[in-house]
Image (tube, rainbow, N blue to C red; front, side, top):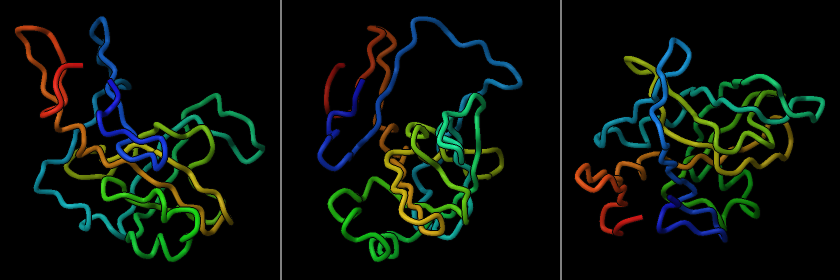
Length: 170
């Protein structure tokens, strides 16, 4: 189910839900990510370090065979625009946040859809990689779709249907 307000032009609401035909067996390595509660506001993570995971390209421009991780710092939206105004102004929306890696360590092509997690009591997921803008290694920017958008999902157990709240059955 693609978010009903998804836009290809500016990658707004770049998120979808996949309904599986069978349950996933949980193990020590396969666990659901938690979502932060609604009172957690995005500005509280500016300057914080989160962990991005994905199977994107490595330094030799080949796809990784193993899940990789990179620590990224959340950048205040205006600072992100300042650094890459021409590239980001048309696409940075309020349902995204911006992050950046350190010299040579960041998300890369192929990491889109990977989660970004912040340590709380347990690791909590807050976003999915939406767009990776590679400029200079020290200024790479990663736009993250804020997972607050998936809280709108409601499951009607009697009909077994998923709904985006206020947008109807999918």
